[in-house]
Image (cartoon, rainbow, N blue to C red; front, side, top):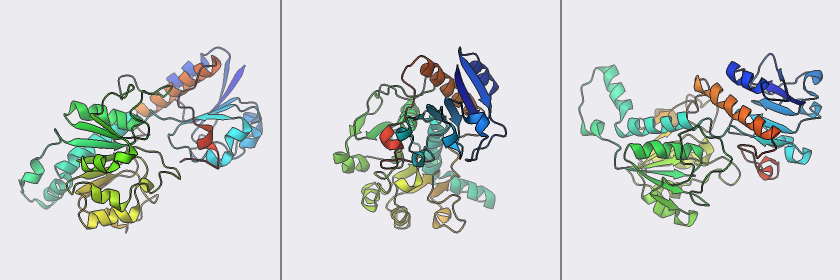
Length: 341
């Protein structure tokens, strides 16, 4: 019997599918919490699989644990646990969030290009202004993705349908995706959509070509602060920066300087340097910056539980069949010595 512990909000159709798998015994935690907290040892000690937002504080009591499925893309909460040393595998929810993040990106491109924030301010002030800057379009422009993972690939698919050119900056090219979760009909699983793919040695040419730069990287020691002042200066003064990935990918002072001195036309930011962003932080005050409170992944939407449970049930089926798990995390990235957030 494979014993499963569920420590996420229940999605009844998903729970029914899970309970219907042969040889599976399911226990659901109550109350549910998104934060780390201890669980009764009697509840967790014999569980082989854990489905959670964050592991319990007393994870050491899960002496039979073999695999953790988390309900987020970021896995920083797992790194201090040194799971590889304990022989525990882990997988994340990559792919679950691609659709809403891609829609956020497209919305931000349109909003920034047409300067909808100023149009709304004009509406509030009862000010009639039909300036040409409110009448531009994104068709024919170039969007570039620094990192070509799931959120980039679904944004690229939508962008192509709206007539944009797609460029990608990657370490290993736009390769086919293998054993990664994807909502059917979305993304670019074969890596065929980009009109041009650039290596890190071609970063300047990549940046110079763009009207929109979209950050699509995970945050780790290698990528933290990767986007420098020199990179932002290389962009066209008419270019916009979108960051739905992780705030510290871009150096904070470099971004502030780029906005103050007009190196770029503006930015849309859903991930930030502080949580919450202080109300007196200067990024709030730029008229050409759209700030959203880390909601592009839409975890409170009706689609999120359906997708994250679909991923988990698929993975449990794979686990039982001894097949490769979807979104399996690299042991090196999970270890404290080489961890990623």
